[in-house]
Image (cartoon, rainbow, N blue to C red; front, side, top):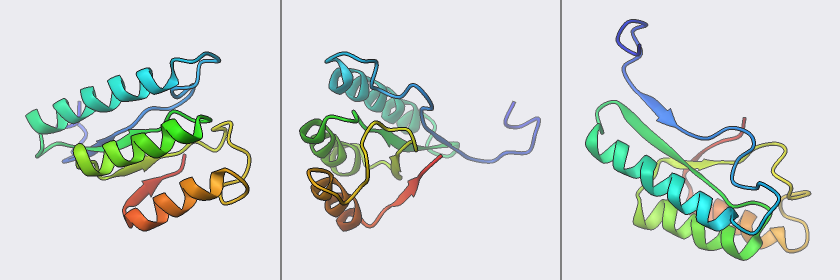
Length: 111
């Protein structure tokens, strides 16, 4: 399909409902999806990039996954949905996530 529509490269990312399914498995889901995406990128680096999925609204899990996404997987950025169940980035406990994200200085996708 990409060739048929003259799309040379595309980032992989996840849309709603993201990793938060109303249970405690957000970290597990995010890690699995991110690792799978990184495998696809390694196999086809000329065609795909990766915007990592965050286990929102889990602050500690999100901080750990940001490190894994950017440092371990070498992803191109982070995907944060407007309905990420987080309130406002930079307020309260989310201030740490905002600072971590800003310090990473990576491209980010905000659908």
